[in-house]
Length: 303
Image 1: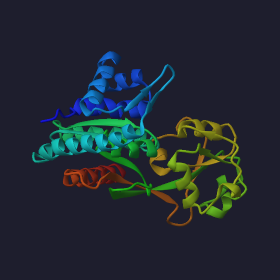
Image 2: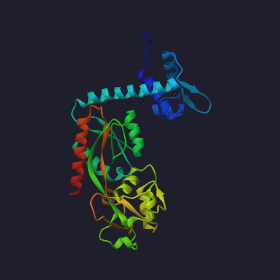
Image 3: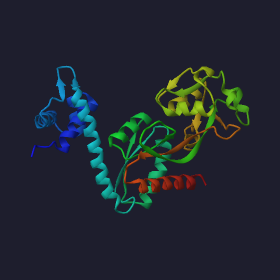
Image 4: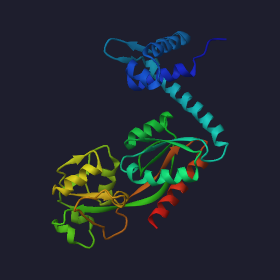
């Protein structure tokens, strides 16, 4: 019988394809570079083909290598699913789960959620990764994450989603701004205003504009930031206005400033927060229970 590649060798190859660098791939796999290089060489010897082109500057995959990487990632994900299927046979919230969360949700929702989870399910271990939506979806498909907590909709193939709650947008400005005195705001009031938003790549930007039925060309965007906290400080210094998620305002993001926060005068100016997971995962039941837990925890907090 011909020798077969090991899962470790396939993991090394997948890491090299992801990082395009032997040193970084070795670090991601928690092994030395020589160990990873030897593993890749053993894989090539086992299959009798060349998978990686090596030079002094970078690492390139051969055409066959790219095809093998695709199969390798599928195999590694299937193995992860096999393990989680066995874990799922036990009691829910008794094992481990890898959760990806977007930056505009994590600091406002997770503290109370994790506290409630530790109190009710002390045996449950939840690993958290905070990143932008596309990076989280890529990690989900690669098997590096089990489930995501993010703003919906977000384009992704072969996934299931579970909407959990609506998170309304509120207008924040200085007290001197003309809109600060309004009892409620209409989306059309924002046209032509200096609206501070997060930079491209943050789905909050797109969802905020979509909720207000606005396009970039309809508003003046004087500044783009990488965090809501930075935007709050910019607005507090009189540089434009912004839209803040209600969960961030409730968590005190404007504390220590003189910002005025106003609601919109109609429903629907909001983003949807929900869970996303791979379609074929055997942990769907547990993931839906997690969704119910998050929804209940948020309801209890707001009541």
